[in-house]
Amino acid sequence: MKTQKAALSAGLFVLRVAIVAVIAAGIWRLGEYAYTYGYSIVSDAAMEPKPGRDMRVVLSGDMTVKETAQLLERRGLIADADIFRIQLKVNRYEERLRPGEYILNTSMTPEELMQVLSGESEEEDEEE
Image (cartoon, rainbow, N blue to C red; front, side):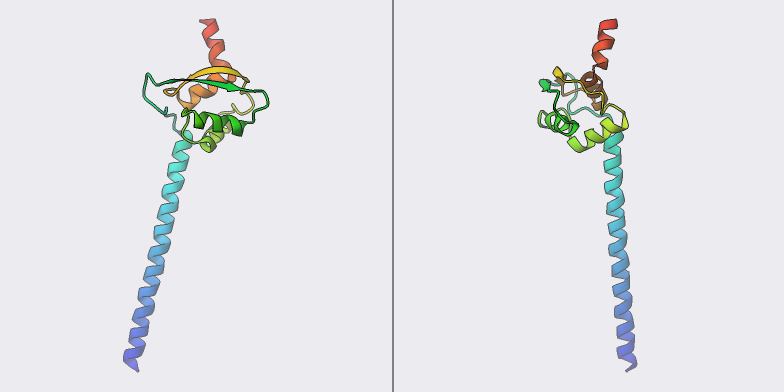
């Protein structure tokens, strides 16, 4: 009887340790994912090193921010459309995108892309 009770206690202890280990591993993976996702939002890395490749992109007036981000992702200018949409919102460019034809480069950072697509880069070029 005592040996059965001791075996049951040992089995329950092992089970509890296993459950705690699985929960700890899950928390670790969740933290790792959250860090990677957050870092990708604040990072300003280009898709390719300079000189990159030029891409012609046309934004129509009826395109949504989501459609614009998806177009940039398909053209290889950004890595992830959803992250770019968050970057637009965080950097307050979401409402400032202008329709038009643009020549963008795969070596441009997301910040540079936002500036060009909002017309800020063109104004600075005209002043110089």
